[in-house]
Image (cartoon, rainbow, N blue to C red; front, side, top):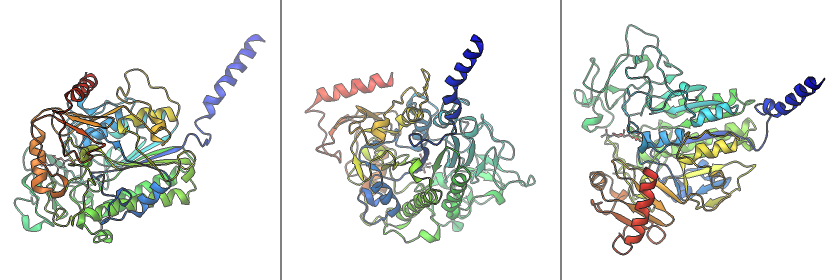
Length: 512
Ligand code: NG6
Ligand code: CA
């Protein structure tokens, strides 16, 4: 008798845990992260752009919270994405730098990544779009099974651009295989060491190109664009650059439709506005800043597609949407696509200094919008300091999952800030530019330690990126007061050495 009661009690105790994966509760929403590539703080009309109109993002902002002080962790893609998905700063992992298209997987298979945490919480998880976190274990056979990859680190489904749209191989990988690929007589081969195969390259056939490229981007031509690296074979599987937004949107919509009855997490990782900029002809001319702006409008259209799909499926109220970018903007990034010539006075970083690659605010402060009608106030603007590295712990808290010690070591539960409820957010954020020098923002102060590497980057920006940077970075340390000087023009390090020392200490404590 006693044991029967015990079993019954145990069952009653277990019951909530057993049903919690299937019930539809408003406080545990679906999650959709729409991630842009290289879209800057000033690129959306809700962030002040006038030559680029982004009506869907503006509407999203009017229905949710728009952040003025939200950061990705790094000024380039791979490290930012690594931090977002693992909750660990990328500078802790020496391999977490901008990866080649044939680099091995950066994330340990089976680890508790953001998608894995959500998967364990009962979510169906999917990535559609740019990956750029490596695939395989060293040598990838693009004609066979490609793993480990997204499916081994928490995603139930994947349809990815393996690296970037300017790197070979220019094929989508669906699950473990190249999409649309079965012709074993024309095997896909990839090299980042030396030219392979007989396909034209930007060097051998420049007349085939839609626009000229620098040397680095003058490898194999697929479509009419030369890439970084060389590839051979697989022509039937090559993606169509102009169709990419439509293809990724189709895949994302299909996932939402298929999972209408499930709780889902979709990481929709778009390529806009990374080079090569090749928006669909439907979007060419839709901005007043040339192809670069047109690609932002294309991204906005994708956001609109996701919103209208959620509306059609009546999932809007039950879906938390987070839109942000992986790093700041750049004009010239390898291709003479007219981005700078047609900038037309558009400031891709808005009032901020610098952009992609750089330690200045424009490198890592990114447009960020969060919408979840059942919980997030509509039309709010938050100046809370938030960092994408915290999304893992924050979403884990949202779905009530405990993270064991050592998992996501740099991720903190900042859910209240991310939902617009806490106006303050973090005490400080770390900003990782290209090169070894990390920057830190704490409150209104911003500190960039002395170091040499960023000099070339900003000089290149000055030469090629016009409005993105005004004064050259030197190897000296910098201290700016962002409240008085959001454009980081006046170095106050001599006036406030004690502030610089405090920020240096904070930075060192974080690094250790
Ligand atoms: C750089 C490429 C740049 C871009 C970047 C990655 C050169 C000279 N430049 O190495 O064109 O591909 O990597 O961009 O090769 S990111 O947004 O994915 O970080
Ligand atoms: Ca990027």
